[in-house]
Image (tube, rainbow, N blue to C red; front, side, top):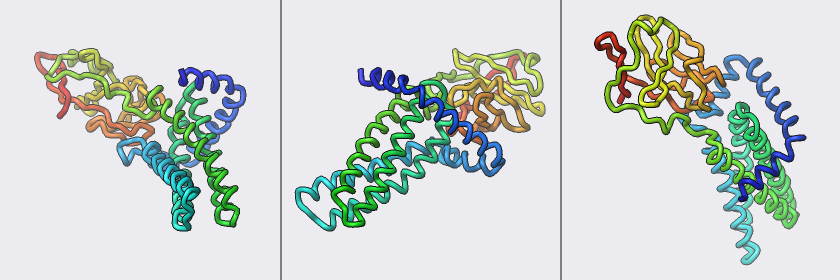
Length: 292
C-alpha cells in the first residue's frame, strides 16, 4: 500500500522532476563525452567496477549509520547531558557529511542510465539526500557556534529526510532491481549441450542461442570460439546486438564492456561479470558447458 502511494506521489511530480532529470542527465553525458578516457576511469571507479559490486550501496551505509548514531547520542544527551556525547554526535555527523558526498557522486553515476519511473524515483531520492546533507551541514555549523538547539533541530529534519530517501533507495533496488545482477537467476546446463552447427557461426558476427531457456552469446574471433552469457548484468541489455572489439563485446544499451574470454567487466556501468562457457566441437556441432 505504501509503495503504491509513494509511486503515485512521485508520478504527480513529473512536471518538475523530469526537467531537472533532463538537465542533470545531459550535463553528465557532456562531462563523460568531453572527459574522454579519464571520465571513463572515474565512472568505472564510481560504478564499482574495481569492487566487482555496485559502489553506491556500500557507501550509503556510512552516512546512514553515522547519522543514526548521532541521532541516538543526541537523544541520550537530552536526558543525561554530556559534553562527550555532544562531541561524539558532532563527529558522527561530520563523518556522515563526508561520506554523503561520495554517496552522491556514486549515486549519480548509477542514476544516469535509468528511465521513466525509475529515473524520477532516483532523482527524488537524490534531491532528498542533498536536502538532508544541507540540513546536516548547516546544523553542524550551528552546533559548533553555540547554537546547539537550532543545530539539533536541523539535524533531526535531515535525519527524517534521509530516512525517507533510504526507503526510496530500497524501492529502486528491491522493487525495480537497479544495481542487481540481471543474469543471476538464469539456469545454465550442468553438462555439454549442442547449441549450433559449427558452419553457422560466422567470424566476428555475434550469435544468440538459447540453452535450456538461458540466452547465450557465441562469438568466433581469430578462429577461436568464445561463449558467455548474453544478458548484460547491468540492466539486461542484449549483448548479441552489441559491438565487438578485438577481445571484448560492448553492450548496445549503456556501453558496458566485457572480455570475451573471461567474462570480466572491462568498463562499466556493469560491475558483475558474465558467465563463461567451455566449448567443444562434436559431429559438426558446437557444444557448450558452464566454465567452473
